[in-house]
Amino acid sequence: MRGRLGAETKKHNSEIAERDKEILDLHNKLSRLSDEIVRTNQMMTRVNERASPPQPPRSLITPEDLERHGEDTVDFVKRAATEAVADQLANLQTKMLRLIKNLAAPSGI
Image 1: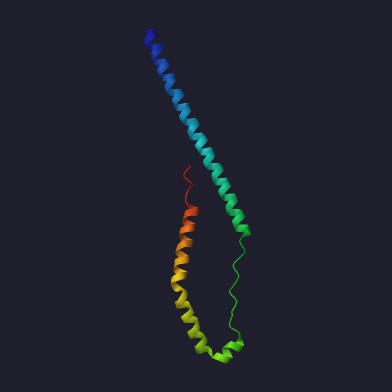
Image 2: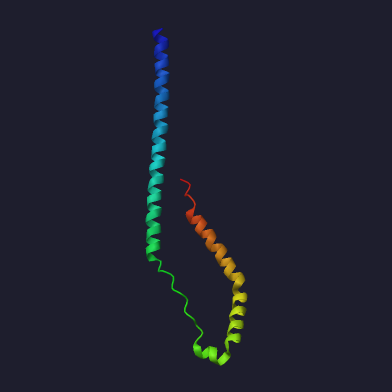
């Protein structure tokens, strides 16, 4: 009876040791993830601090341009220029959204 009790106790203690090791491993992973979150937040804060607030676009068309060429012509040129770069702008927006998504994704620790 004592032999069986000793074997069961030994087995039980071994299982507890394994669980303790698993808990320690999980604790270490959680600690690394917490550190990663802190580093990411610090990096994002630095990036946000460096980024200047967006400046409203200033008009490149002067009152003299409007008077010389007329509002209809200036409007036509604006629309033609917008159409000429629309594909490139859409491509840049897609790339920007992909970068934002990649930055927001977890690091996979």
